[in-house]
Image 1 (cartoon, helix red, strand yellow):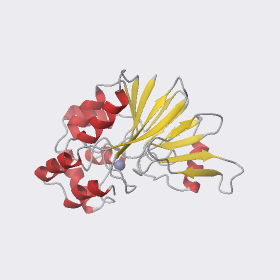
Image 2 (spheres, helix red, strand yellow; image 1 turned 90 degrees about the vertical axis):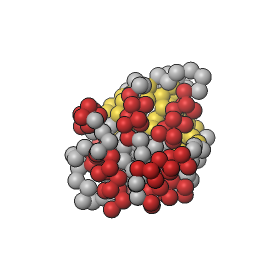
Image 3 (cartoon, protein in one colour; image 1 turned 180 degrees about the vertical axis):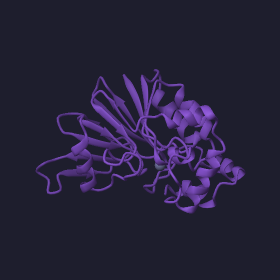
Image 4 (cartoon, protein in one colour; image 1 turned 135 degrees about the horizontal axis):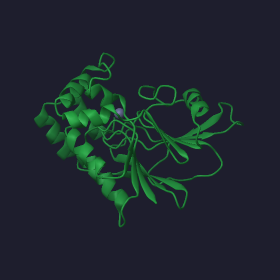
Length: 246
Ligand code: ZN
């Protein structure tokens, strides 16, 4: 079975459509695993939710999903993110709010654990350093973990012999990770707002027969998304950052 692994779609329908079409290829996807932040920042929150829910979806919430439904105060958000969260709140139906509200913070699916941030603080903590990765791995009850939130593709390999207890890699387009005995954490990067200086949408595909995870970067129609954001009156920096992948 082939499963698309996506994170941080952030209401960017053009980017989401592009990765889902790429993932589907010639045969249908078995499932889609979503690591949170379906909404926030972008112009199409409801359409992104509807698109994802057409699949057999496993999904955890992110901080922006919670902010949009009032489960998380926006005090800690910067001004642009807070403005986008308030705009997003006005776009969601009661049914959509209910859906986001009831997502479990952590999902276990076979050998995988899905969470937005880390297993220490599922909604908020950014997994970007060896010490945070180790705190996460201590709590990870499955061989493999999947996280989002940083919008940066990352592979963490547990390694007791390494000085820091793990190795961190930044996989590029086309990287193929073979699943074996080593415990791993993988971040597929951000679909709708990449932040590693590469503006292309980022996501991964898990092939459960081959036991591989492949990482992909895809060009999408950024100008179309930006035009909709302008029309919606969303903050200028949020529009611009899509062009530079930050
Ligand atoms: Zn995010």
